[in-house]
Amino acid sequence: MSFIYPRTINITRPQVQSGVGAVAYGGLIETQESQIAQDIPASIQLSKQGRSGAVGLPADGKTTWWKILFHGPLGLVKDRDIITDDLGIRYQVVAPYWNSLGYNLLTERLET
Image (cartoon, rainbow, N blue to C red):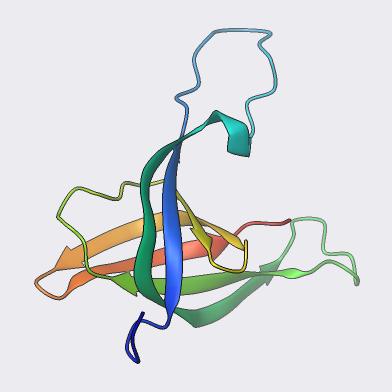
């Protein structure tokens, strides 16, 4: 950890869903995710607040979008990978972007 990367993250990848018709629950289950990397120093920054759920009830929370920045090799992170931070908060990767400074991931915070 450092001043620039004060947090740590773990990266996991959900299992590929297969099957046709009536199949078992296909949501994100932590125990069925493959570990890709762990204890990576990172910076987690709020990008913007999204919109309310489709129903639009007054008590519905809004989705939030986050940027996660870290150094890592090209190809390490893919769409739909799951990032778990040092506080146990989970984010799903929406757009992984890599350049010479490392990764700049656009993620959506998952409900807990």
